[in-house]
Image 1 (cartoon, one colour):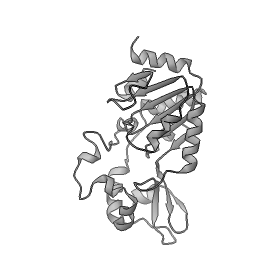
Image 2 (cartoon, rainbow, N blue to C red):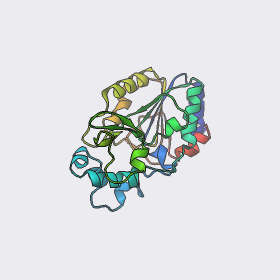
Image 3 (spheres, one colour):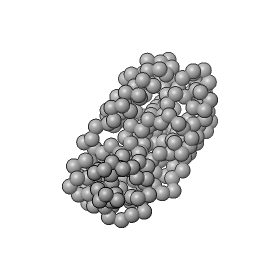
Image 4 (cartoon, one colour):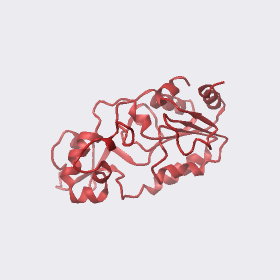
Length: 237
């Protein structure tokens, strides 16, 4: 029995699955990965992406932040892929209790998933830093320069920038879902970004499965390891 067959059998037997996903889930929808060979970290800008996407850079060089943000983080034509749809299907069947994602693109919700814990926020939510009014992504995507609210305040994407803390309530709910699951599937992540990657330490269930193109620090601990495209793997489940 190969690893994909083992994964399918484990999914069939599992009662409560929690999924923890990273950039690899979105790359197959055409969204670039920060750390892959062709990712944003390997392209050339006036500043490194990690610097541009920091809280301090946002405050000091706001116009430059938005130029990069519109160009690189608002993927206009991205659509959910097989992994997104399979997870939504499992949730509808009552098999999956939550999707935990490091991605900010909203594709899990677009595929039909209801319980999506967006650890790093979402480009689809934006708010005025003065009055707090909510704004859709269109006000940033379709505008130029600094996005402004009717009150004149600056509109900020509801995404967690470097130097900013994760939302504590989202983290607490993620931990609860992980603890309740008897199977955890980790997909499309190098497990390099903390504190989100540290969430796996809360898993106490029966089966830990890992689906990623490349090896990760967790491979030795996982019960099932599949090194392949997550869309291809999930299409077979």
